[in-house]
Length: 394
Ligand SMILES: [Zn+2]
Ligand SMILES: [Zn+2]
Image (cartoon, rainbow, N blue to C red):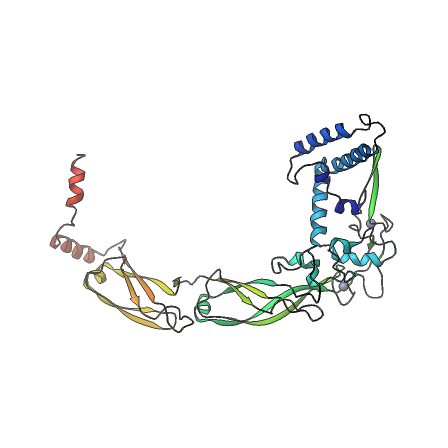
């Protein structure tokens, strides 16, 4: 068994269990299959013996919690190409014990950590998703650049009015100082002293010997003694580019904007991918938004509600005066036409002002006296319809 085995062999399939199987399910399935294929029960049957070996090999890994985790991890890592740099080791004497390019659907490129091939890209998956993942089959001809996704937070007024912002995008690339091998210029990676360049270590357990990826060199077979100062030995660097992106007026929280051809450049003349920008809009401390209407809550006193008043309230760009007619109930919504979000067709939503009648928590003596006078002069609230129901329980 080698690290190649770990990547190529599906131990779950060998034991006939799901990847999510519990350790009990794995044990049960193993016992059943091992019994059926045991050489003692199948004397002189080489196929049964093969099967027995395969089942035992699979169980040696999946039956051990720790090893199973490592196996899962390794398969997911290699499947997504996170160790792509290691492909360079293939060209080193005694380098990779297996051909990484097989794992990437023949992506070619001799270990260049390119944007399109998975590569370090998964480390930046929050920024870059989609396109050319892992071992997906590549179309013939120049490869289209990959789509890029990013997220932008806009201030509330900018989202309402529209704004152009410079967007800095980060993409993984090969370190130009060391050309990706991670070694300080003038030095070379050397064979790993633990695995002697094999990339795997072997140990014996019972009648089987097991190989695992070397922990000292992470299966690469070489180690870097003097690290490249630019990439700190990783072989990869983050490259940045800046784009000016226009966000149209009225762009809403959660919206996704597609900018055709502004993703990663294509390779060797291929067309560029698209850029998808996920928009977040920071909430405003005053205004809310419902579609094209802006919303605003304005506190008024009981006296203002009863007697009526003119209210001067802010809009996003200035102020507007609203008439509160006498006898306006709390919760009433006043509408300032055209003071909302200006749409693409030039028409605008409204500003919706909700009146919040505020009850004072404390009163001055004068105010209390005035209010008591007011209460004496005011007919009781119309509660007869409720009182009838209350009397039934008295
Ligand atoms: Zn090693
Ligand atoms: Zn470097």
